[in-house]
Image 1 (spheres, rainbow, N blue to C red):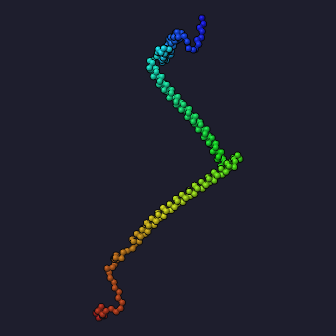
Image 2 (image 1 turned 135 degrees about the horizontal axis):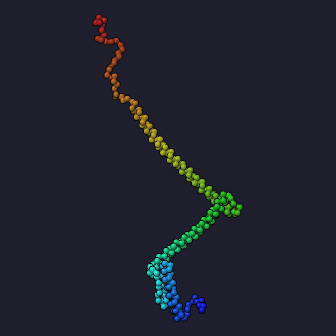
Image 3 (image 1 turned 60 degrees about the vertical axis):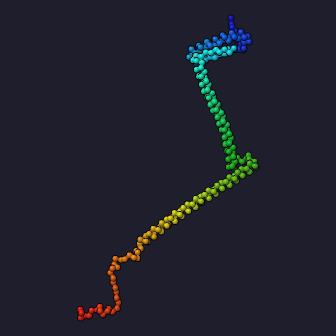
Length: 218
């Protein structure tokens, strides 16, 4: 006799529902046992009857299997969050990339207009705005150039001041050296000559009588 196909819906008859539960529960527990033995799998099965009675089977201990499941669930949850964050970051990067592309395109268009290119589509107001931007840019450039000139002049003045100070110091050293050389070349007045002990006297005129010898005395 061909067995009819069971409809997947709640059995309304209480007795039939209880009988069906007992048969299928036993079959489910048997299949769980066979799966753990034949395939060396860790199997845990928990079933509550309609009246709240617990039926369970665990090939390696129910608590061990539950702990393993919780660890794996946490890892899966952590990995899922990391994947979600990566996906969100990737979407943000795509969004930022698209915005940067638009900004770069706008900057390129503005640059060409400032260079005097692609002005055919510009209105009078846009041309006036471009002219104002160029005027302001030129004013900023001139201001910066003037500032650099002033800074350069100040640097040159500072170098000039340093060189003058060094020149003054060198001049003072040269003058002091020259004075030292002159002092060494000049002989002091109180220093006597080695021939000052010999006195010589030159007399002009008739010698005194007492000092003149007559011919007879010779």
